[in-house]
Length: 589
Image 1: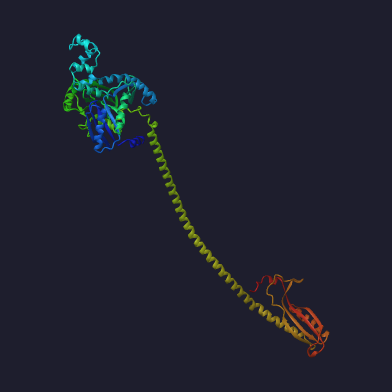
Image 2: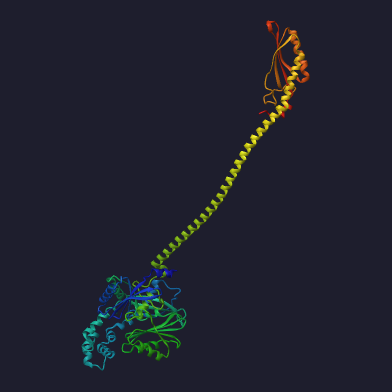
């Protein structure tokens, strides 16, 4: 995941420049899927590399390039293999690693920069031969040489190489000036160097020691190139060695591989075992042919006979070199090919572009950045930012997922509750309906009960009370008929209160626990008080058999009919029944 985040942060296109000190070649590459495509190319032969950089960038921008980042391949960058007691799985801190590699690489870089001397540049450009260069150096250092005697030795001793070669007639001043201008961008006297490295495998015969591929260049040159590109609005990201970058075009293999690169005036060979570099060499000799340089470089390796050989040869005699080399080593040699390799796009440029865009073998090439190598992945600000961004994104996604899940659960729970509530609501409506029906039924039953009670009371009244009352009236009338004499006149007889058919709550019981159920007020008139008293006594005796009693009898003297003197008799005839007989009777409605 981390690598994918880094790829997202990388540029999708890159400007790759390549120089030998006299010519600057440039190509803009872009990532198209898993392939690298060439968008534009440019070339400049300006003697001053600052002018050359300005020319190629202007040409590219005129053709639509919008600018961006760049990398540079230069012969001044050293590429070598060091044996260090550092396990790649347990690397030292960046500062310690940088100091260790600088200590080991510094003398090798000093030796490497001798290829950029004026003499070597003049030979490489074909302006003079190796023999002429040797003669100039002998004269310069005061050694004997067939080209001149003692007089020449004394005359030219300790003179500059270029001036001496010009005076000897070997070169022209313009040729010397061209080489001096190129040397300004290939060599410096700075002691401070910048390094880059790539871990390889363990040294087979030295346990605990590991191969490390190291690239190095002086800090002054790196700053100079960076400034030149920056003046044109382009950011130089890294410098690569001119030789060895085409290794990124090779594929992984479990078998031993050998890469042979052919360049102007030099060859480069690299041996890989188990996808790790075990040996590499740079062979310089402008006097030999490309085939001879490649063959010499190949023989410096201790390669097995069944090694897979690959040739990266970007020159006019490509086919010739390939055929002669295959015949000489008696092995099949695979020519490195890629769709992005053109007349102005070398295999090294393509390989460096693949390496920078993380599309090729990352451990077979090492570049050099201003300020030294990048720290460990987790120590890089962009990686930390990518991890932070990824973490925040994951947290946001997790939060969104959690909220979505919780929302789904809540919605499902709500739906379930709604369904249950609908069921409850339906049941409640049914229950309420049943309650309403029960209530109405109760009311109906109450009405029916009332009707029944009224019917029952009517039945009691007409079936029991009315006959009893009629019999009672007949009894009273019979009693009166027997009790009335010729001296008695009945004035009135009326019912005092309504007949009680049940026991009232406030009824007072007599000592025999009897209650009045019927009461008749009687008023009569007697001629004499004796007849009045006799009437009362007779009435009491006649009432007793019928459970009737005469109460509240009273005799008062008062004029009667025809204004005759007499006595008024008042009394009550009551019907008494036991209280127990009325307890079981219901009240009449």
